[in-house]
Image (cartoon, rainbow, N blue to C red; front, side, top):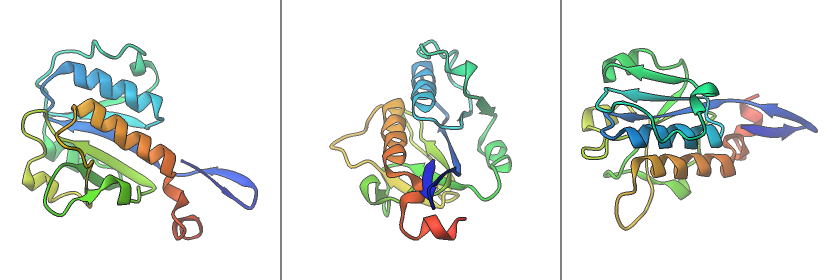
Length: 166
């Protein structure tokens, strides 16, 4: 995300977003489209229960890579270095999205439509964030809300981040 330091613009960091054990292909395509719109660097899926991405009406595949991991172990072993894993889940101890400072480098992990993120995988996350709603959102919509929040917050905008991350 962009920041300004001494009059020059810097683009630092990146984010990726993906779904663990997604059930419906429409959510993969929708998330891919949202990720493309909000400037994510990549999308991914862990496990494969869906068939295709028909809901990707912007042809995001032409502009944004999709990584597919066989299982969580495969995903965890290929995580980028020095990149925080942020679970998006309604869970005990989670941080409300409006109080969360997005890290400069983040991978946002969403859970399956019917089971969420398993506890053992949440334990691998550096942060767990929830969107305070009256009930669960669609998984692709959840991704859009998180990416929008990252976009308006600008990860380097936190007062202590701009100078310390140079």
